[in-house]
Length: 468
Image (cartoon, rainbow, N blue to C red; front, top):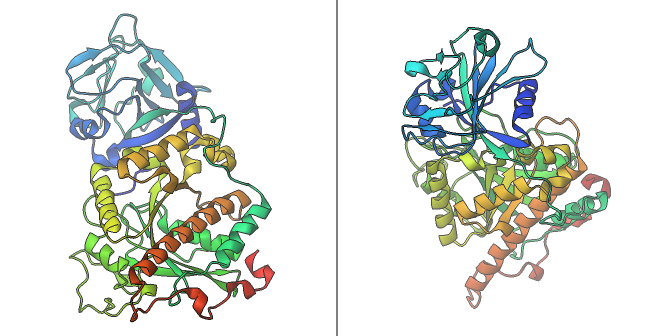
């Protein structure tokens, strides 16, 4: 299935938001992907709270309806004083807004396409609109849709209120160049507490398009001092990553190696995608770098990509779930169930876990204006709490970040969030190593012992310019 992307231009979205106030739009349904039928409309849009329909035609009109009420297929007329029809056209300086006729219901909540009387969308399960001016709403047909009733696209968005900034940040961050350097040096000076392990190995897991590969590229860029694109990233409908990849990072071109290995996997899908048995083999260190995931089933022990003899260095020391903040509220039940199943298995294996909320700037305009608002944004905090409740992950383990996507130059605030996330990953990896040391304590044959007992590579011996 192709990735869902809004057909609204920036100007069209701005005009639509001018009718709706301080809100955020979440794309629920896109007919060119899901189909122009009432059944799939209701499957994606029922019980979603306030929504806005966005219909497109070849005449260049964008028009539709807003309602603050749920679609439930109850079969009754619904009264909603907040409902209105609208139309956006390049020929007008501002959008047309049409309120309901006083005393008449806003829409009929049936099993058909959305029925607002004067406009019935997806009429007869076709990419068509039935226009009946005067039924519930009064307008001139030419002004509303240019008398073109054939749909070229049909989208439905959930409308969520954006609160003002919180009076106090829910986490305190120092947004200074000194703090950025402090975080970077702390990461470079990190040493695992186990003598046989020189780098913490962190696995990124998440739905398609969440930003796993982009997160690695962003971390790599921040340490290199310029934009990089080592991991393949994109917005395709299927997972761009089809191999298991392990990535090392250097501080500056030809600089010292960062004591962190980021591992990338296939994206999670409703049907297919990463197999949980493959995931367990990754956790235990059995899958080699560049193993090509198979759609026919998990890796076999005699496959070329299977590593039979593993050490603690090969194992995953921390698992990081990656979720697109813009899609928190529309994660499908199947994807949520997969994430929960993975979390249960990861807990059983005693691996610490974090969650990254990516694309925070796209999710909240206040954060887009100034990344320093990320922990003062009511909306970002709300999404973090939603994830915490749905996946059972403590709020303290959820970290908002922004990946580099369109930028050509690095940004101090973006780097600060990225480095802060990496530092937490290393802290959680330490918890894993401490647990392993406790398990092995008293075992005379153990392979493990404290890193302070031996000579280890010192990442601090690099020149200062390599980490700036």
